[in-house]
Image 1 (tube, rainbow, N blue to C red):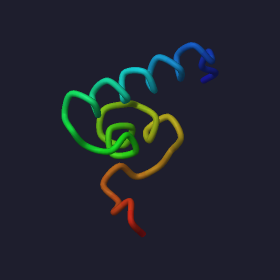
Image 2 (cartoon, helix red, strand yellow; image 1 turned 180 degrees about the horizontal axis):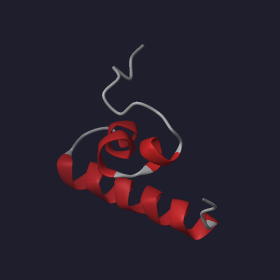
Image 3 (tube, rainbow, N blue to C red; image 1 turned 90 degrees about the vertical axis):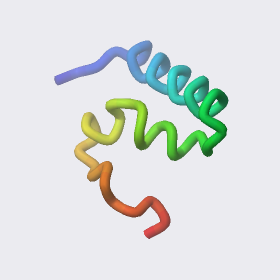
Image 4 (cartoon, helix red, strand yellow; image 1 turned 135 degrees about the horizontal axis):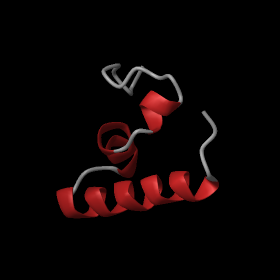
Length: 50
């Protein structure tokens, strides 16, 4: 499936706001609060420090 660039931009804006409100890192917010990992076929449960 092909996604519009605006869709990814919105995902990142959402992740940024969630990180701000939750007080945790942006990368963690992208991992936990967006569909980016699923869309890109990555494993969300994997330890991001590896």
